[in-house]
Length: 84
Image (tube, rainbow, N blue to C red; front, side, top):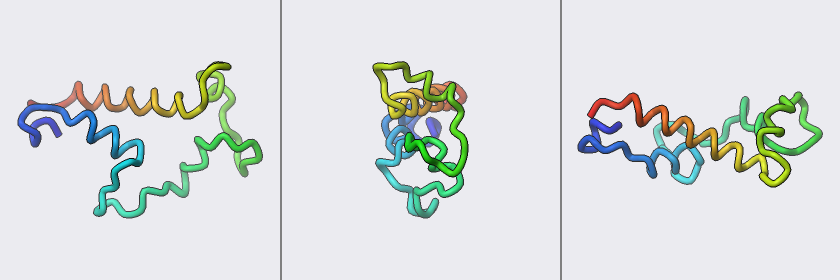
């Protein structure tokens, strides 16, 4: 990604794609039917959500904050493995 962007990793563009703000038409619909509900805070899901996932947020933070932190961790990793 950095190599195709004059040696600069496109952090904001990657964040928008991962967070779902920007769609990639070639990838189809951005809905994730298999994993999408895995991160849904609704209590009565048809599957178990790992309780440690919600504890990471702490009492002051929402699960959405945890998801954003994970997205930023992926972006950090991707930026470190780029060829310039």
